[in-house]
Amino acid sequence: MQSELFKYVLFTLCFKTILMNDVCEMNTNRCEPVKYRYVFYDINPPEGFNLRRDVYMRFAIFVHKLKQTNLSNFKLVLPPWIRLYHWNKQESVQIPWSHFFDLNSLKQFAPVIEMYDFFNEINVKYSKIKIDQVYILQHYKEMFDTGKFEDKMQIEKCATKPKTNFYFYNNITSDSIKCLSFHGQASHLKKVLEESNAQTILFDHAEVALHDHFGNDIYWKARRSMRFNKELKKLAADFRQKYLNSSDQADGTMLPEDWQKETGKRAAKGGPYLSVHLRRRDFALGRPNDVPSIHEAASQITKLLQQLSLRIVFIATDSTIQEYTKLEGLLSTYKVYRFLPVEPLTDGAVAVIDQIICSHAQFFVGTHESTFTFRIQEEREIMGFPEHTTFNRLCGNRCEKPSVWKIVY
Ligand code: GFB
Image (cartoon, rainbow, N blue to C red; front, top):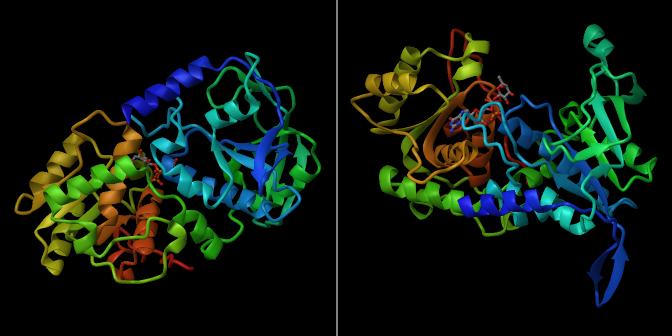
């Protein structure tokens, strides 16, 4: 993982030049020049990793749909991961998507490329990259005031002063930045592409655009294509084997190498442990009625272990060490595990490994409305766990039942 990051840092330091070139694509036995165009997107800086994954899906579905239109020459440029609010180590280099995900799997769904692939494709020759057209998406304030939502978009005065460089690269700028008030599905942005000749178009605050359809077969195809990086999967598998007596073969969680060959079987058994996602920090502070105290969490976990006749619990949490130690003490009659990397890993990589381990347990309980929990639940739907083992939450003072998002093929 380290050498991959190192290569990436070297690359980003080295790019100096830009030249717009047509690209050749082998179609049948001829080489036809294709003038590619590029959609970029970026997200409100404080948003976390798993909300960003959701926004990725909205844009992956958008460009996936373009494949069947006269705009099929658009590629989606993946925004590098940098300085996320929840990453304590505050990784200060741009991390490529392949650090977390299997790029080939993503590409089976949508024409996506890493930022450094973009630099390669356009054969960088100048010290600055100017994005041809930047649209900063913003909500219609009056829709929130009146509660009346209708699909529309129009260029308006910017609600806040727009930034002038993008992705924390100071040499990615634009001479044309407009604010686009927007309400609607991400694929309605097609109109913007149709009305423009720009080769590079960036949608900032992409989280403003909504899902085309939430939970249909296309949503799940996009989701299933988000297979994790194989090295992270291996680290998680080694941990499961070593401490949790869990392996894909024994647990019934084998999936075909290619996500497109998956079929909807509900036969997963999972490893003989309870997994818990206990979201703390800003989430616990902001939602005291939905997130339990450490004492409360321990008593709910104990009850579940008793009901399930299990002795092993895996805890994924962003808590402080003090909180984790307290929880471990309260559960001292059980075997309590958490993933602590033996080799240096980024915070994001540890979080992915936590998610993988949680998703393979016989029974999972998560945190209400955390997207970290949602992504674990989706992984379990993909592997085919019985519903009742997946859609469970730790309770705060109140405890509505969690929504059930069943997979669709
Ligand atoms: O993933 P995420 O969008 O989930 O953001 P929420 C939470 C981040 O906190 C994760 C870390 O991406 C991780 O970096 N984190 C949380 C964890 N739980 C764990 C865990 O169990 N293990 C590890 N290793 N790391 C939303 C945010 O978070 O919470 C919003 O997206 C906002 O921006 C809101 O902050 C309050 O949906 O839980």
